[in-house]
Amino acid sequence: PKFWKDRARRRRSASALARIEEEEDRKRMERERVRLEMKVETIRAIERREEDRKNIRKTKWTVEELRKLKMEQELEERRKRMEEYVIRREEEERVADERRATEREERAKKAIRDERERRREALRYWTEKAKEYGEEAERRTEEG
Image (cartoon, rainbow, N blue to C red; front, side, top):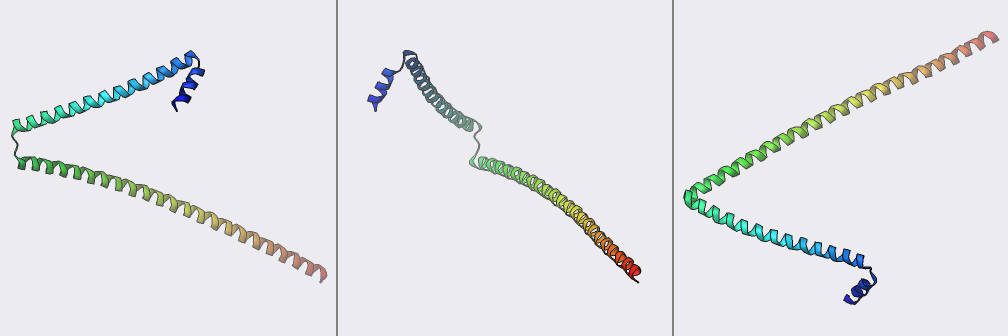
């Protein structure tokens, strides 16, 4: 409520009040500036529209010519959009191909690592078996 604002204002120092008033003035000026800019923009838009009307009257283009021009512009925009789409798709495909190639390489490296590890394990296992067999043979020769 206004009562509380007034009460709070009375409590504040003069410098704080001056700062608050400056801030309020600045905000008010900003709002005024924006409002005036919008007015100016509106006036300019109206002037542009009138200028365009005059120019159309000067050139005296027929409705058909204007329609044709508009169709050409739309076709050009469509062509540009299609080109952008194609370029974007090609880029996406290239990135996907690179990613798939990288994944393939990673899988191949992993397969090679796994195979080496498997062979190492097999070698370890058979070395252990051979050692056990050798010890068993030594025991037999000592006993027998």
